[in-house]
Image 1 (tube, one colour):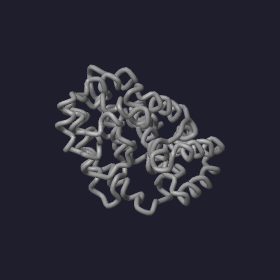
Image 2 (image 1 turned 90 degrees about the vertical axis):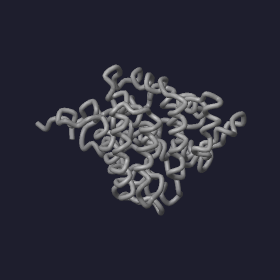
Image 3 (image 1 turned 180 degrees about the vertical axis):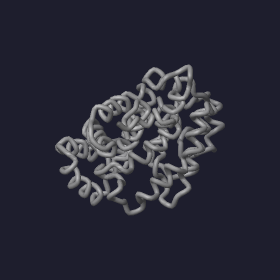
Length: 286
């Protein structure tokens, strides 16, 4: 019997890097890059390179470095490939989870992850904003009462963040009504941990388990990247179409259709990646 990865000396940073690799290798994941499908501007190799490039930032998170610093370093490393933004959202979820998993005073649970979130500072928020200078990220509308907090300002928003005393947790609160990754931060990573349990309870190759977990997540609620790019009605239609798929064979046709239609449920892939990390930490066998 093969020992779980967690019994063979892999720490949280390596598990996070492995989760990035396993997530993009899972197929089919309708609308997203996987080992069988590229998008016009994003290719499988870009994601592999981005995963490896993020390692230094993930190691910072494991070492106890501030969340914002570790996240910016991970994004900077991820960006060193030709495709652009491959895994910004994945890293946004992974960095606090790695911190929780590595911290002797916390554990990898919703409570432990929430403790990391609630301990973030204004400096962490500045690091988060600076990460937007490394890659182009699709974002929704800026809150009307906080135009100076537009993340697209990058480091130029640092003074506004300091003047307002806005922590990274506060930034996620501001975004939670329109961004599913921010809702993970503010909601104890609820979908992440549920999907991790699905991956652990499933059988077969981990890449197949990840693909099935992705489909379950996509059928569960509208993908917020799709909503940002195409509107809420399209996001709900994507959710309904995913719910009609009963297995991975049927998902192949949906994958081809979404690529042809330019539908990219990237936020759902982010949560599937974070769930893969949790499953690896909890001993899913490879």
